[in-house]
Image (tube, rainbow, N blue to C red; front, side, top):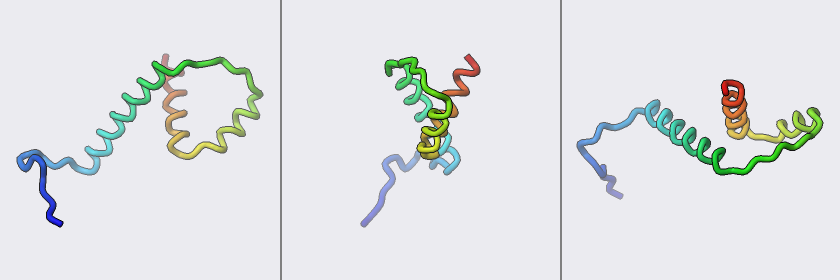
Length: 74
């Protein structure tokens, strides 16, 4: 199979640039999701919340961390 470059004159992005670009896209998508998603204030025992955190995967925990950081800086 022959591979070709769509734009041969374009500068190839480094792995770090690709990662940073993906992070920026993820941040925009996350902000948009938070703007359009309705929210509820649910009172649950703190121990149940901590237990639920144990079921989240790494990516979900990173999203949660960023959301909490946003709340703390608001």
